[in-house]
Each structure stands twice: as structure tokens, then as C-alpha cells.
Image 1 (spheres, one colour):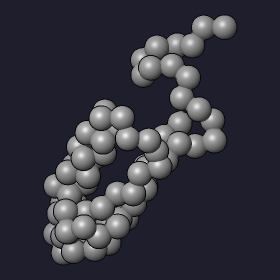
Image 2 (cartoon, rainbow, N blue to C red; image 1 turned 180 degrees about the vertical axis):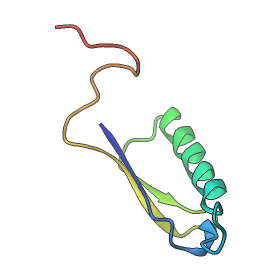
Image 3 (cartoon, one colour; image 1 turned 180 degrees about the horizontal axis):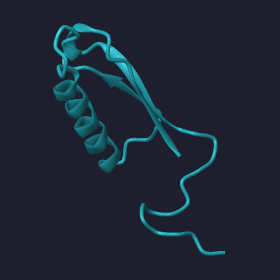
Length: 74
């Protein structure tokens, strides 16, 4: 299991706007996907567009055993 935690309390998430967090969250998730796709190992620190640490992506104690959408067979 991959755990992704993002804190949305800083200015990059536009706390004064009702939907302000969406653009920054999408940017972070795209950046994370690019880093995973390029082979970067977890855990990965998540930084907002301004470079501030806002979260972490890490593997939970159980390991990833099958690609998404596929069942593991015994």
C-alpha cells in the first residue's frame, strides 16, 4: 500500500478560496507520479510549488504485490 499525505494549510493551497487547493494538489500528484514513473524509491518528500515541504509518499509495511487492476494468484 502507498500512503500519500499532503498538508493543505499553506499559501500555495490558497486557503481563502473554497476550491483553491485543487490546482496545487493536482500539481503535487502529477509531480509524484512522474517521480515514481522515473524509478525514484519511496519514501518521497512532497514539496509545494514554492518548495515548502507539505507531505510524504511512502510504502506502508505491507508490500505492493501486483500491478493495479490485477489480482494476485496463489
